[in-house]
Image (cartoon, rainbow, N blue to C red; front, side):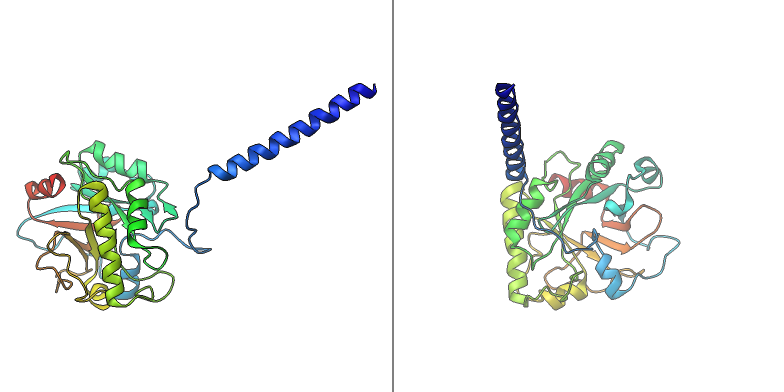
Length: 274
């Protein structure tokens, strides 16, 4: 009886030690990620631009353009997207949010990114930048690891970086123009090193001119995806002579934001091909 009790005691001790070891191993295996502030939301492209610059009116038809291709951008806010309907309604390209900072991954990314591809759209991924949380190279790495890659298959757009108003505080994230320009440059350099393509830069003219200004110029390497919710585009940010994509409305026919590619479908494929 005494021997049996001793055996049981040793077994209980061994089980406890194994449990502690398992917990320790589990803790070690969890990657350390930057936590977004408590109560924070998933921020989509233009969410802060709309709040600061206005939503514009919901137009009944697209702005008259000499040649353009309609498209859309989505995030987890759209959930599982009906890609067949978006295609039937005329969307031919899509940008899908992949990441934010270094602590957020879009839980709907696979359905949205793969679904747009399978229906026949040219699609790409974008990253919502938080420049006060970590450096540009670190966030580019996080993005590249979590959907921000690129391949020259003719249907994958280069990864995009979303530069807009700070959802948590100071408009320019506490950085002056030189510091912000350096942050974008670090992101850009790391992403091209990782994927072979410079990022598309998403921004608004007002935010960019205030927070980056003439501190650096990216027009020679990075296509511009500009947000302006109106029937007329207006002036472009410092550093660009033309735009590639215009996010012209925050809601409309397609799920998410409404976009126009500035050119023919062949030119859109050229942007994807590189």
